[in-house]
Length: 496
Image 1: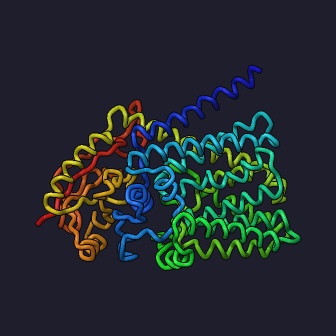
Image 2: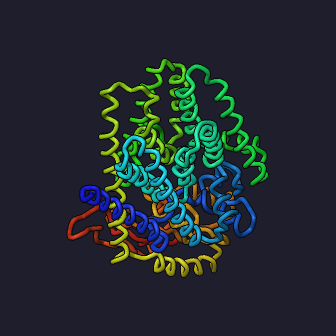
Image 3: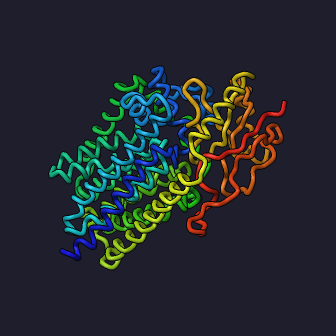
């Protein structure tokens, strides 16, 4: 009993700490929204307030499509926030995203424990906590992007299994989830499709065609039904728009390690390792044709795929590798024995990444620039910009995204990173095509810059106020990263 208590108390403390941290993100509004939320959250606000599927802050998509209609990508995330949860401003968005993250963590923790106790018994809470921690870290770093919902969605079939349902019900749940993933975000939908087809092949190696047909029918009906009933958008028009404008990511497979390496440590090791094990299993089962289909599918979208399209599947991959599902792969004994220790190393890295965020939030609360103080200053700039008929822009690729300081009536405009060391052709084209003028640009404190540059956009904007902090993030004198976390920024004004 005493040994069991020693093992249980650390888990109780850790899991309770994660829940408290996720709840605190709603209060501190940090780490905040992902930088792409300018495209994916603003349509939800427009939907809640005006019933419109529009966005007005994300310049790259506005220039690609020529207008502000949100008729590309997936719509499930926006429908959930705007139509179901009625998020009319960014404050309510932050609160509901925190609630979604807490729900995701708790649901994955309980579901994983129930599924893994067949193999681990009373110790199942340990790997279950690792899986839930991976989900929490991914969700909090990608809130504001649709992929935030992937860990929760993909856990649904395992949840059906955990409550005692088997067979056809589990398979139908998986096929419904596939359809929802497609209308959540198309590229992850393709990846989910490949995973489900591989799962069918491993379960039904002798006659997979009939089951794949059932999967296609259910998932297609789910996706098409959602598009018709929720949005009224013709599915064919939605598909054409996504094929025409979607997937123009600026990075390819060689950039897998670039983003969020400190925040999401070893995420790519988990993904690549899972794919290797799946490939080995398919060949050992004689399903070489399925391995070839997987390779062609992944290779065809690799150039358009970034971290957020893949990493959301890590929790379900870990659960499959640690649970009974891994037996379908028939891995060599030596390779099978490596799975648990390697996954435990990855869990440790995720826990360290999440613990680092907890420490940074503590430093923000103690001596950082708060959301409220930044909002007060930006409100004053909005008054000055409105008097001159101008707008406010903000540096785009930064977390927390400063789009959260805008409103549905007057959004802040994203400025490309090229404005730091030269001109920003997107900003110039935006002003020309839409007849608008940006007067102020906000530059949040960047970790790799010691001080803000004197000008932006090839001298078109000059530094008016340096709000960057000069000391680094440190705990007990030990530096743990870049600048002190917070909402500090420099202000640039257009030179007339």
